[in-house]
Length: 260
Image (cartoon, rainbow, N blue to C red; front, side):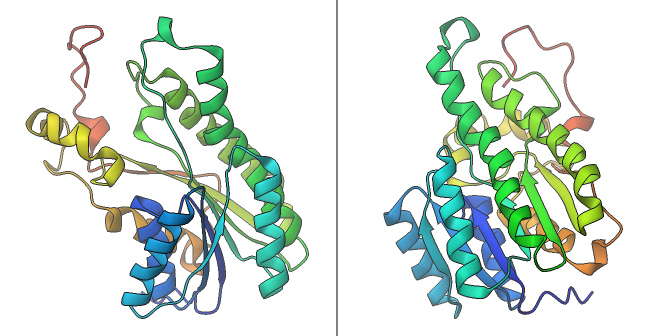
């Protein structure tokens, strides 16, 4: 299937590792002009080296997505450089794992600002530039934890559930501007951030996935390129689960507080 993404200008926050990096790489393979953002200059440089090794150029910018001014600066830089933004991917995120009764307001606010406020403002910034050139595509990264209880991850789960609703709401409001908005809902994906959790509980976690394997970043990245393409021209407001059937085999009898 031809995606016809060649020449599109793409922004990926949280693009220096894991799903974000592989997604950015997938767009580069399609001939796009890609900018990745991360709060770590070191990780951006390392990612740029991996792009170069694959024969691609990637543009980078240090961005702390919990700071709206950083997101605004990212949009301004990309638009000034390319004259348009075709695809904006709100992918950056963070988590604090603590029991509910130990979670502080500061913890809560950090996760909310990093995961959800960043999507709100990232969407604002993207729309400001997309409406000048006739539209575009905004893609958000949620999580399977948006759809099930997530012990000791209440802030993360709340933000990821919020992203699903924000996606649907903004899709309706932005459609008249020629802007489609969708979100991807990954399951357990083998990324650096998930490596420790998977290694400690590999057999049990794998048993909770219908396809009996963990995902890899490329399982997810190809969904982003599809959703950004004209092949998905009639898809907006959707939350696409990419989990290998994680939610098909949940153990509802698991002891309270013992779910992995």
